[in-house]
Structure formats: C-alpha cells, structure tokens
Length: 139
Ligand code: ATP
Image (cartoon, rainbow, N blue to C red; front, side, top):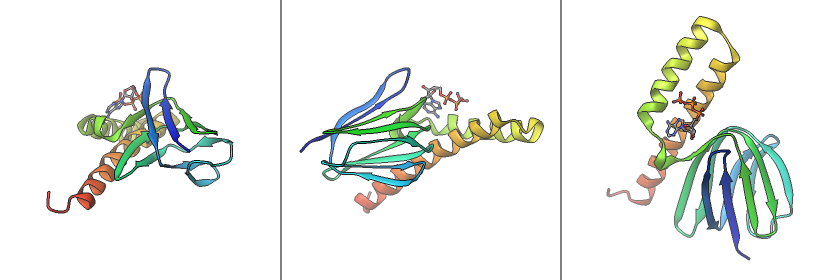
C-alpha cells in the first residue's frame, strides 16, 4: 500500500512525496509510520523529521504542529518547515546568535523559541550531511 507524505505550512507545500517510512517526534515520543499504520492524530515536537523512499532519505526541519495518519497518507501541518537541502545554514547561524543575544538581554520566550528554530535547522543540515557521508563514504 503506498504512503504519501505531505508537509504543509501556511505559506506552501514543502513536500508531497510517496514514501516508505516516516519518522517524527510526537509529544508522546518517537513515532514511526509505515504503510498500513492505524489512523492517528497527534501534536509534533519541533524537531527533525526523516522520510525514506527506497535508498533515498528526506530530512526536514519541522517547527511543531500536527501530524495525521490516514489510510495511505501522512499529513504534517506546521507553522514552518524546510527540507534540509533548502536550509540556509548561514541564516540559521545568524538567527541562533541573534536569539542567544536576545535571551541574554530580555529572557523572553520569543528568544527561546527563535533559538529552538535555529538549532533544529542546524541539526537538519547536520543530519543530512551525516546521511550523505554514510551513503557515499568516498565522496
Ligand atoms: P529568521 O530570523 O532567519 O527569519 P525565523 O526562525 O524567524 O528565522 P521563521 O519565522 O521560522 O524564521 O520562518 C520564516 C520563513 O523563512 C519560513 O518560510 C521559513 O521556512 C523560512 N526560513 C527561516 N529560516 C530559514 C533558513 N535558515 N533557511 C531557509 N528558510 C528559512
């Protein structure tokens, strides 16, 4: 049975692909979805989401939101998400520095949230890099 993963933000559809497996971090813990998974609706933690299709892996930074499993379909609705290869690493590093300064100055929760987003983006870039190295150790 095929499984389609859609990752949707208020701005755009970040991903709409047939996949074999999706792994994400729900509020209750790690979630792995294979075709035929029981229907489910849950909140997501902000984290890296990985989807696999054959030998291909898709790595995404997902900033919380909701995940629904329906027959043949996984839908992620989230305020912001990017595929790791589309992440501007420099921008995320700048955002991290800005957020750290903001936390030092004001200790607001906005600073904490901005720092969390930047760190997840940087982690997604790292995970993608690590997977590519593993797949092509000679490269
Ligand atoms: P910044 O301070 O760099 O704008 P942010 O955390 O405030 O980061 P968001 O409000 O989460 O940014 O996202 C705004 C838009 O910019 C979204 O469409 C998001 O996908 C995109 N975006 C944010 N940071 C990056 C990045 N480092 N690389 C690519 N796209 C990004």
